[in-house]
Length: 67
Image 1 (spheres, rainbow, N blue to C red):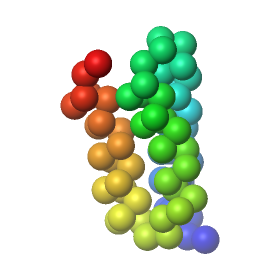
Image 2 (image 1 turned 45 degrees about the horizontal axis):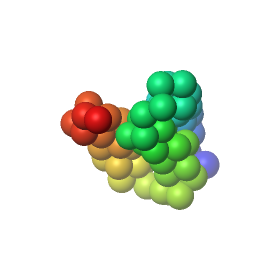
Image 3 (image 1 turned 120 degrees about the vertical axis):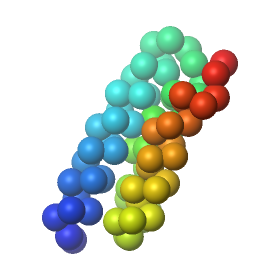
Image 4 (image 1 turned 180 degrees about the vertical axis):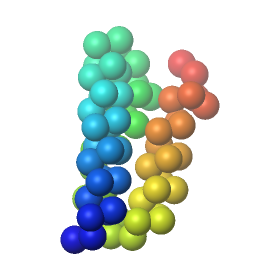
């Protein structure tokens, strides 16, 4: 596994964990779902650029969609 891919996966997984915990404590579905997706998606995408695009969009999703 490429070191850059590993570091980006760790970064977005950590952001996803924080969003998941926040969404669970505040009972908000958008951060909860985005956090869960950010923890799962890095395992499924082997391409660094594609992972950056998808995880960047998932990270911005709670800012765009307001409940």
